[in-house]
Image (cartoon, rainbow, N blue to C red):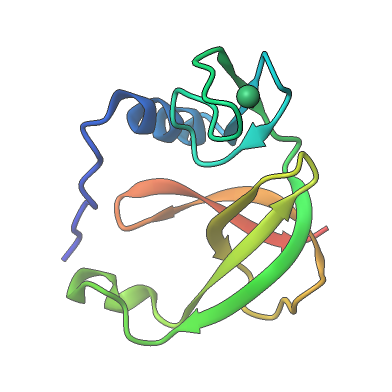
Length: 128
Ligand SMILES: [Zn+2]
């Protein structure tokens, strides 16, 4: 059985997932104060400006935290278990949650790849 994870109806989130399907990880940078942020929101959380621009990460970063999921949130995802979820500090200065190689440890340098998971493409990090 394959279940497609439902996507948000939010246009900013939908654009982000479309970029991921195309092999790019987007984040926002404020045109007024220069702050970088993830996830995309359409406004700057540092200064309140609406002049935020989508930029694309190089895909390299460092593992901040990692855990292995043995009991997925949906029965449809059970065939994927165990799988690892990490918080990755991208070199651009933002942190995102993504799939990762379960053998990674905190502090490991990583590079993004992409894989199919639950019916859609997701970022997945492996050793650089
Ligand atoms: Zn700002």
